[in-house]
Length: 246
Image (tube, rainbow, N blue to C red; front, side, top):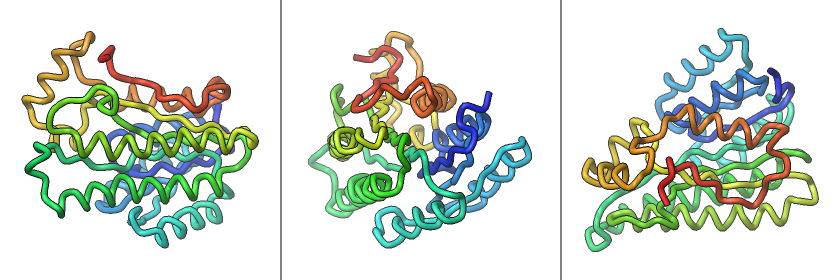
């Protein structure tokens, strides 16, 4: 099925676990995929090659998302080189899991820069450039409403972006552009295994009815639904993909 035939999607953090899974899924249903990366260019370019060899269309773009000039250049480049932007999926973010009292000033500034500042710039350019009838999605975390210890800074920074995109849904409705948040439980990615302590993962899984972590392909499948024709009447929502975690 070519549900997204002729549509261009920009995926921030497109060379990460969930970003790459989303790029593959959306390319498979017809989207032209702009794979954004900040580091590890070899992974991004390998993903682009994989998509092209499978019959899809993709191109890699580099940018530091906490730098407003680079974000604007990124969107301008995708817009001009790929014939416009219809969908933005913002997956790029980071997390630090430490007791609140132990977080350093540098760690605080790093999370604020990578999550809030970068998220704001991406959503601002998305609001300016996404064409009528388009889609904007950000990935967030279930912890914004289901808090656990050691996740306050991470959850707080994600909640800020949640509020921004919910406001965008009100601002962009007249253009038939939808804007939604996908709030995730634990998703089995290298980044999560590297940053979330094992005891915390075990605790959350024990509270999850499905008793497991999610898979990046499950995230990609949900995104494919939301950005496709069947997701056109869903906007201004925080959709929980958590395995039943309340």
